Length: 100
Image (cartoon, rainbow, N blue to C red; front, side, top):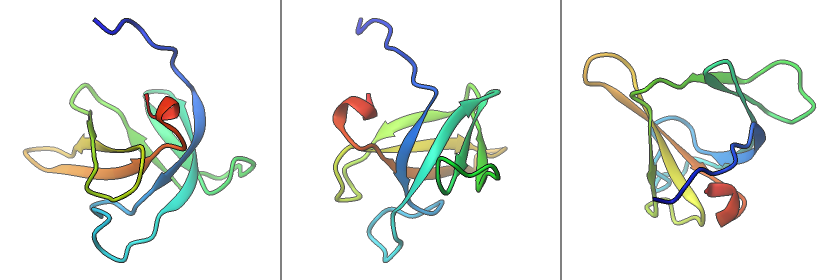
């Protein structure tokens, strides 16, 4: 096995709007993420006190590598939204180490 990795509780990631694949004109935006209480809370900037949004992480949440965006260090966060519907959020880390 790969062994356990250190869990980072906060940091910056670039993100596309929900459902975007990077093939459209959607623009990447850098957001500050914090892992807290079973979810990811994200802010426009690290110093902001009001979050832009929150993603609930459940056992059905999956992470998948993604090269389709044309950007380095990309991955998709797949969130089940009830029934068979899945939302996809494209994210990009600042480095390969950050991605891992």
